[in-house]
Image (cartoon, rainbow over all chains, first blue to last red; front, side, top):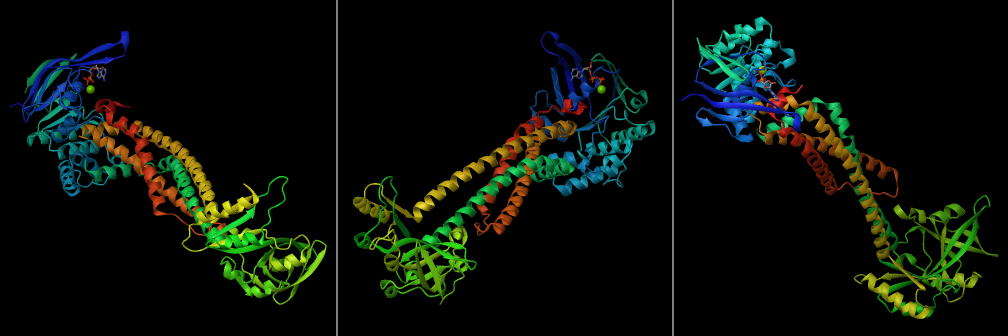
Length: 230
Length: 396
Ligand SMILES: Nc1ncnc2c1ncn2[C@@H]1O[C@H](COP(=O)(O)OP(=O)(O)O)[C@@H](O)[C@H]1O
Ligand SMILES: [Mg+2]
């Protein structure tokens, strides 16, 4: 059974109102299957719909048409609360802009998704320490984001996703805000996670980043134009 | 998320902006301060009034003639005294006179002269001796020139027990032997500590030109224990009005005093409570404003939390808790401020005798502040809960 199955997934954005309403077809009927353990890079020019696709995969957004099955469950039309629950238990996000809580320590940031899962303090602290150790930040537990470098921030964000033990890791241009050395570090980390069996989907427009992946999906104007397995 | 975690999250958010948090609270602080102080002040005042009245009046009914245009003043007779004595009361007759004495420098001092029976402290527990004695019933019957002075009279006239004091009743001068002095009244009625002299009413009849022999100006009725004051008061009014005419008799008791006083207090409390409510409304709107600002500022944070699995309910609870904790803090500060101010007021103003801040008032104030937080926090919290996670993450 495939981990992710998209069938004819489309996304239409409407902006403006009345006669000036503009419809943007961000996704035009995507069919996509992701097996467990894959490491996928989604590439394509800006505006081709990569982020939109990732948001739908991560249940942050809903398709306008088509169906989405995640781990065998139809999640196309989950309500808010159910979607939040699936995000919390199944999906790990890593964003270009890190998105750490600025006033919380690295440890607290990593604990956050587990807190929303209702994990008691001791257990989630232990899990967060373990996740931070896995990204090589065991000596930065009490640092605030402002006291960390860009690469370290992104590793905290990855640790936060790891602590969730997610079925799938989704990353939207995770190296976009990093210098090339930090970017390589972060990508080595994703490779390592993949090697340990995680399913990883990364959106990027940098070929060097995509080179780490085993399968590259190319998009243009809301459509998949190429799907290569290396 | 567990409630304890939501609670901590809310507290952390409040501590992140201490100054702004505090400033946004001022409205609530002042509102709760007003409500608390005013309710408490009401309680303190009521207590002072009741204590004062009980001390002065006890279970007394005062009967006087009511002035009417073009009519001679009502002056009671011996027959009235006998009539009232048939009721379950002890009757103390009063004859009023007015005299002028001299202070040590020869300046005139106005003295109210009360003609009363002997052994008055036994009849009226409100009269307490400070020094000397009260003239006896038999001395009073003989109309001896004896006087008991109030504290104020003694001081103004530089009189002392065992000496004589000279008083002028119009053109007539009289010398009275001072046999005792009374204690001043406390609390609310401290202002009644005017220069006064108790003398036998017979002496007034015999020596004061304006007095009419055998006539009394007022009766004080000491109602026997267990007897309904109101019944007696109504009966007295009915009996005397039959003799002197409708509306010519004034009957006052502690009950009538306390009734009017508690009505006034209630009105005052309602008014002041209204002012408090108004500042709470303004404070609440301030809280709503600051919470809306906070939601807007933290749009990305909210988006992130949702992306990580926070439900709309968790976000809503977090922001509601923030608003409620905010106003509760304001409430506690307001109560503390009220306690401090009331303490100073009670210490400074003799009329307020005891400091009262009842648990009921504190609970009410806390409840009100929490309600303000919930009421004015609902909308901002709802705005936060409804944010679309993607929009929120994109938000610049
Ligand atoms: N919220 C939105 N409202 C309207 N149009 C949007 C919205 N989000 C994305 N789009 C449009 O959808 C298209 C795909 O956007 P996106 O998925 O962000 O592209 P990419 O990530 O590949 O750069 C773009 O044309 C973009 O302008
Ligand atoms: Mg994008």
